[in-house]
Image (cartoon, rainbow, N blue to C red; front, side, top):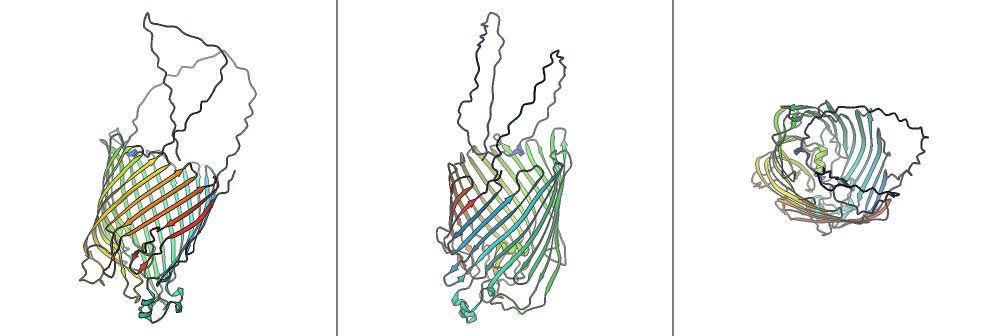
Length: 582
């Protein structure tokens, strides 16, 4: 919640002309200061695009004159100041909930209290569901994560930060019906163990960062971040990732009138993978066990020099990205240049901001990224880096303080774009493998937002997508299939959301989502998804509140992936409690 207050006092002084009225009135009496009651002016914060503004330098001179006084005041005793009572700080909370299927939810957070030099704390979250779908059996899934974090500022010049985390995720490859299980393997679900079709991932991560606290753009500033993570999975996968990135920046002048900042950013992203095929494979696998495989370092290196400056009323972000890709192939390195240019213009006193951009780069599709996109991916998934060239147009319009309209259009040229298809090595048709394609994507869309004094927030938006295939990279794909668009990509999407805050006591949230038709693996069209989610929260006081979360209120049994029907409605009831701390 943000409050803005502006006080001003204007006293006009006017010289009297000859013959004009000129009198003074002196009133004597006791003075009693009174603060009149006034209404609070509450309105949402407005974020103004500062790129369209440039501070103007001006100079002035002061001639100091020392005044000598012959008066010497008598000394007085120091007054004793009674401190105000310490206010309660809320540096912790825990959130607990239980729901249908059943499902459990737990979030815990604790941090140190306010300190100019250091901050540290811990976050814990847990989410689990024991769901079951008729004819498809159990579809358990869960996620648990623990993070320790800290930050320390040295002499107001250098900030050091770090966090260490551990995360455990698991789900089931439940995408086969009882009839399919009987027809293909000649068995029933009660005779197989959950471990036969279980996916489980563990990720340990350590991040370290440092950056200068230098806020003057005309002086050298820098930042450095190091990320190390190790992923090990149930079916023998292991992936170690080392990422190091840093940048330096320095201000400069253009014709002694305009100011800019030059940056140089460098990033190294390296991976080392190993996979163990020891005969323990997911249910329905037809592969022959092989020896362990180890892949050496596969890297992506990026060098990105650019500059931000304003010239002739336009805001410029001008640079380029040089990239070396030895990730897609561990025997060859590909060098590419990508544009990094964005030009913006503010109009109508910053009420309208228009921008055009041409950017690009590499993105590694590593095992951790792939399984987050598709949780039903087969072990030993093929990895490549996606190269993309992005051309965008964006417009932001604020016709009033309460309304914001965003519109965008874009064209992307994608090489080794990540898609998915069913893996033929699994006879139950319940596991996927990556499929990489070269395609072009056009999209157009936008959002409209309305905020009314923090009590009511409305938002609506959507996008339309159109794809054009350039080249098919899947050697196992059927050449007779007419690829109109990639698998599992919607034609369009839309969202409508509303948030109501009633006297900071009752909070309501309602969201509706529509996802257009998608093409599935078996030639079928996955029907439109219409999801409805809602949340109600009652704040008993500043420390205690109760909530009810509801998802898929349309009770639609939709499919985001072939052979994987979803659960229907989900309900979780819980509370949030905070322990005050002085």
